Length: 405
Image 1: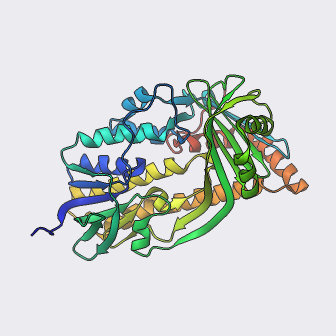
Image 2 (image 1 turned 135 degrees about the horizontal axis):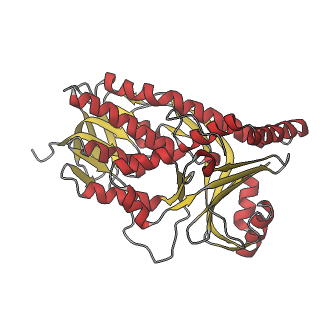
């Protein structure tokens, strides 16, 4: 029949980084996979042009990408290691400094353009004989029953699968179509992103200053520029976006306390609203959510994509376990295994980032003094500081942090 659905083992809705990682892992199992994506990745871009949409990938994420055979391609397209972090409080003055050498590591992670990671993953998927990339495309309906999941595309095509995964971002249509609610709320802040050129070299260091209106981060890029992520309350964000380039550079120079000298240039600016959001469930009948479709947190620690990649790895592991034992990859038992592996850790990270945001956004003098003392004390107390660094790298549990020389 002309309208009979195309049949797959797995349909991944959302071919961004997290969805593509899951599809690549599933392809390694020999599963028939369809990836539905609204905007396929850019293939080329002008030499020297960088995208302000970047992520800080930690060691755990790097290892996931390396296991899928794409890290070398990502590195060839361009990554920027950062070896240190310097964080300070604008109100209380407390400071903390993280150095990868203290852990015996070559770096604390890499700043990578999102488009670079997505392109490398798509190239990997295109080489797979079991993956069908459907793009540009969007879904319009999703029906789940005990036997299969059926996805309807905008062009009237139908895809049937044993499992559908929503990797379609924080405004997930998959999540909405199946009626999974979320908890959380807006922060009444926007994150301004842009590429900036400072007066001084960034020294392969990520710089972050906590301001009362929101945190400001300058992330090092290989060409000497920095990727800016400046979170500010709505009124402040509107005022900053309305400034001419020269005025914005002046405001940023002042807000960053001239940590890299004056800001000399700024590229096109964009902004997105910030929210805290957590799905009440990560799975349903023949359905799972990963990445931002399952959880959204404040970007102050840059952990959003790292959590999403851990989601994809955990779901792939649960699918592999079921597949190798001849069990249904879309069964509730399979998907509950994934949810148990990830929901608790993600909830803790969401709560921690929410707590940091509220703590550093408070200007009460006594609280400002206390948090600055806490930063200074943590900076001097290696056992605690070392574990923070190991957790940020994603290597907690591998070994205790090394003592500093």
